[in-house]
Image (cartoon, rainbow, N blue to C red; front, top):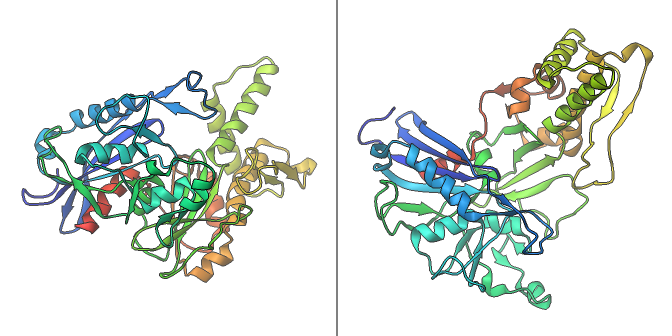
Amino acid sequence: MEGGPDSVCVLGIDLGTTSVKAALVVGTEQGQVVAESCSRETQAYTSSVEAGLQGMEQDSRRIIRALNECLAALPQQQLQRVSHIGITGQMHGIVFWKRDQDFLKSYDAAGTIHDYVVAMLCDLKKPLMSVQNAASWGYFNSRNKSWNTDILKKSGFPVHLLPEVGDPGSIAGRTISAWHGIPKGTKVGIALGDFQCSVYSCLTERTDAVLNISTSAQLTISMPSGFQPPETPDPSSAVTYFPYFDGDYLAVAASLNGGNVLATFVNMVARWTEELGFQIQESAIYAKIIKAALDQNDSHLSVHPTIFGERHTPEQLASVTSIAASELSLGHVTRAVCRGLVENLCSMLPVQRLLETGVRRVLGSGSALARNEVLRQEVERIFPFPVVYGKDVDAAVGAAMVMFQGK
């Protein structure tokens, strides 16, 4: 482990939708270094039939169990050196609880799952939520940091459950007891948005843009200091503004179409092959179509790959145009799909706007981008900036890094 005995150690926690990650980050003279990390699947999805819900329900106890398993797997001698804890997680969920007990028919508090963990660690009388999480819930004015209680009251919403709101990066409280070797009295930051922490983990310069292509895809830039988003969000806009840190905002083009499109394409080829009487593993198909696309440097075939729609245009699905008999090979089609994914993001947040904002570099991250050389080639073809890889986003690490800045 890097860092001397006097170096600062911070614990970052990400309570994700399907897994929990904990990372120990050490501060050195050169910056922050990830010393140890651990992740565990939560297996928290459960049936919502009894509750009569239309959405997705998770068992919070399983999430907490996965968190405890993560911490138990980290070196206790390092946990004993933790001075601060940064916590982030899935922003759009909600947990109801009663402060005195875990399970009652009525509740007196609500927050995200990571707000809940902060409240339990610090024994908060009323949950404290960051501007980032509050904005993700909606009916919140991020300019004056207040809930739209007038609107909510008129609809009969139980506004007494709404948490108090604080600035991201601030301290929510201190641990009321030792926890997996972490000392009692350790400072705990207000719970943060996982998207913001992911960006924070790699965005080192305001002139950087972050391109992340995993299952879905996001293109993110930091807006100039002093920027304020429109008072009323435009649902038809492809760009969303997320509260970031120190009063700043991120402009985000969040596409529903990323690596999931490529996975669907591979699955389609596999099913066609099976219908013809052959059977090939999808992993083998993926490798072969990427090789074919690498051998085919260009394609005039045009694929608009939005098979999952987009939030701002849910009715607009995928299309293929400029189909010529000479460009029907797997190589042509694969390259056109990869190019279409990048072009779709750029249609949401155009290159011209990046130039106007002062972007000078693109940081490429995400599993789909890492494993697909064709996709990287198309990124480099379309963006008129240097593209740097290897700075993968990590919400747990980002949450820890925020705590270093807030000390």
